[in-house]
Image (cartoon, rainbow, N blue to C red):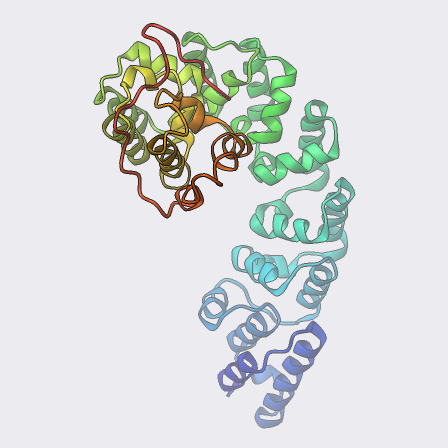
Length: 400
């Protein structure tokens, strides 16, 4: 009988919690009238109904969760849901939380949940951002506020200084809240300082790449040693970026990417030069690296040794940026509006505003098709003859 009512409730589910709760109670009342008393209702059915109608879970998920928890009275779950809704949690947020942490329904809303929500609000989280943040990882609400969350954030704040920076770090990765202060955070900070990384760089790392501090102590030590041996300057941001680039992938994947560069003729020294100029190059997928290098060598007729000195090219989109810009240059060259010795590296790497001012808006009156070329509507056919604009032996300067 209750399963029939559950299906009906799913179809007629109300938007506000009070209406949905009233509907739930009317359902139970209907069952009481047919079965004599609420105690005779199958407890699993009661749990499933509550999870579906008050927590927003679909039937399959509610049925599965009913094997893990049993709702015998709705007083505590009602208080938990009311607290969450009052603080900006949507039905989707609540469903995500309950799905990953079903026992949240039985937490003490006043002593356990409310203080944590109020603490994060005091940092400056907006209601919508806080709801998204807390619902994205149920373990945050399971951690002790006084013993875990506050001490961890106090350590981070000694580096990032402001609540705004602290929130930025947490939005990048909330995993840092689950790390042991004594076993992970403090040893990893000590490792970076041992390699002469200044606190200002550690601060930027926490704001933009806090995951690095969550690495195992031995892993961070090993990677930092490798980066140091490569000749990276610990006073520069590239030192931290290089650590991140190496740490996020397996040795096998790293070697496959190096082999991709070797297949186009790069030596180990050339690879090291490119990586030191732009350590984010190894965050590009192997497939994209090969595709880009093939385009540079076979379509633009660039020498692999020249590409080495502008590795930021591998961070660009072939379809959305490189080909449209090459198409623009192709149109301008074909009309004699620019010389064929234009520096292709400069044209591809410069920012959007600079490229448009130099090559698009300046000539669109004389070459209306430039807009189509720039928007990717014209295919790139190649340059009749091509010169990078760099004399033999001259080092191509990387343009950031």
